[in-house]
Image 1 (cartoon, rainbow, N blue to C red):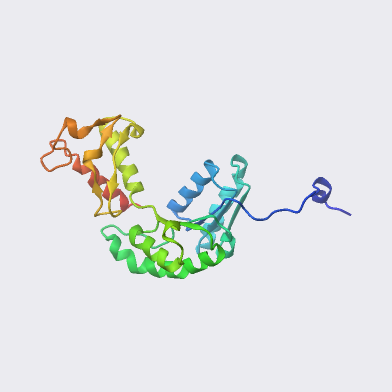
Image 2 (image 1 turned 90 degrees about the horizontal axis):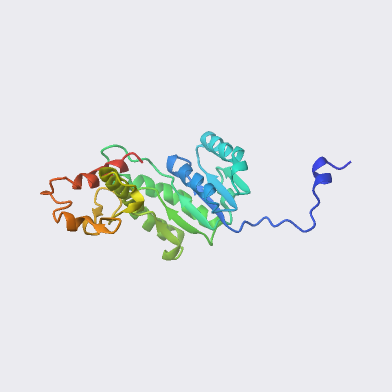
Amino acid sequence: MSTVKEQLIENLIEEDEVSQSKITIVGTGAVGMACAICILLKDLADELALVDVAVDKLKGEAMDLQHGSLFFNTSKIVSGKDYSVSANSKLVIVTAGARQQEGESRLALTQRNVNIMKSIIPTIVQHSPDCKMLIVSNPVDILTYVVWKLSGLPATRVIGSGCNLDSARFRYLIGEKLGVHPTSCHGWIIGEHGDSSVPLWSGVNVAGVALKTLDPKLGTDSDKDQWKNIHKQVIGRAYME
């Protein structure tokens, strides 16, 4: 006797199991899950895979997303400790790594996280040789270079998150100081993500008005409004990652 499923559904053509826009996230901490939610809300993938060594946490996070899939268009959400679940990914986002402690420089994280990359990157490439990689783990600038070397992928396919997060924080804090929505505030942080990053005060503008034209001392020690403290806040927030 046929099952309910067999009576209900008849496949007229062979199912295609290969995803066209699969994204894998390695690491299900706060950053990894924030990435997952954004991907689902923006319908960026037809399949989302989560990988983590913390099996219980991984299972819980995956179940939350799966049970909420009614509200997403992503048809398939999978998870596992084994990297086989990441097979045929178009994009792999690496957020795994030791967490930076307060007062610890990002360089102090380097050896621990390099060892982690050595253990996971070759396996990722084995299962998804045509993927692009987005590196978020810290110190991101160094690890992006390390991952490029470990992966053997072209440099154009290994990308670090760089100072994008710093710049987003910068814009938010400028808006907070002025009482303006951050989408109207423009400014960039360049250089290395973290303590040695550089704010481009000459490029800071609100709705096209360059703040340097209003105060040439903006961001300097003689700036009476102490705008440079905004950059200090940007750096300080990094230790909360």
